[in-house]
Image (cartoon, rainbow, N blue to C red; front, side, top):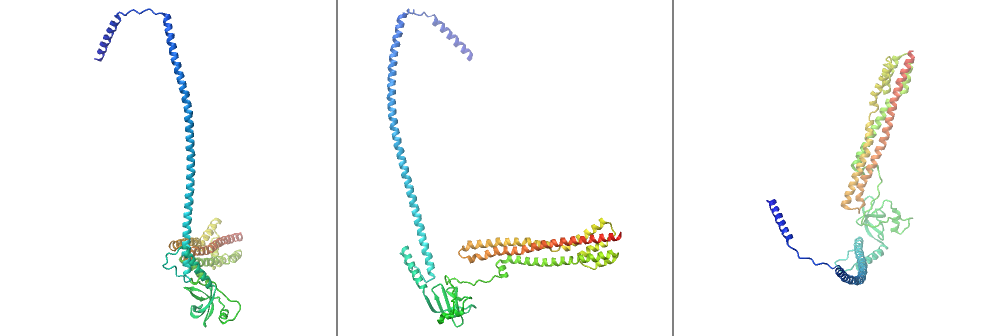
Length: 456
């Protein structure tokens, strides 16, 4: 259908075109070439003049625009420069403000730190002065920090003046055996004291809670001379910082006290050390009995073999109970066998005696290995205990930390004290046992060689 319509349209168009061409056209007038040339030239001149005026107009407008653009550019550059200067001035002002704020913050922090330092100083000074009778500032909460400090300084000055005085007054103190007696107390400020009574006298040391006791090294005669107005040579003195805390006399260290300070692990290491000592003594006894008179035994056996009395040599070797005698006896009883078989018999006999010679050697080395490990365990346990105490009570009182530190250090010390001798004696005795084995083998081979020479 579409193709048919297309063909019809083409045919209609062709018929219309044919009819149009058949219509008669009017005649075209003749053209004057000179007139046409003049018209074209005139039109060209008019167009040229128009275009020239347009170009001039455009050029003038471009020049005006260029001038105006330069002027606006200079204005914009001036404006931008002004804004940049304003920005720099603003940044400088902002930096100055930041510096000022930082200085204010530092001043504030410094003031807070100083305030905290002043408050802590007041609290510490008040706590210290309470030991000397200071009752605090009472209910007067309107006092400033400066007034509180002035009051504390005044109390301290009065205390210093008081402590610079030597006073004598009745009182009680304790003798070295712990007996409390009543007598006279001579106080040299608050740094030293002397006590006198009919039961005893001497320089006093703090016993805690403002109580005093006679120091063990005090010269009784010299102290009695003070109270009687006499001079008996050099006066002993015991200086102390405060009478609140007791001062204990230093106890001498003993082996048991050192082990006790190491706790249960130190005692376990000590028991292992004693066990190793017993094993070392027994091993020395076994080795000594095993190697007893090896040369003397070999000399007698060789003498009887040279004399041709093998039976007497066997009887003599069997009468001895040492390891060397048993190895030599096994060689003498098998002298008629071939050399290779005989050496195997001797080696087997020596291996049989090795159990006796190596007795307790491994246990001694085990103790030497375990002892330092137990010491390390005690060190770790002590450090854990110390850190637990620090967590609970802090580090203010060193005595609280002493138990954990003692466990940490003493167990290591005891462990090394046990391990070093055990390791040393274990190696020495092992070397001794190897030398005994070599001597037994040499003795057996010597007897074999002598028998073979005597048999030739």
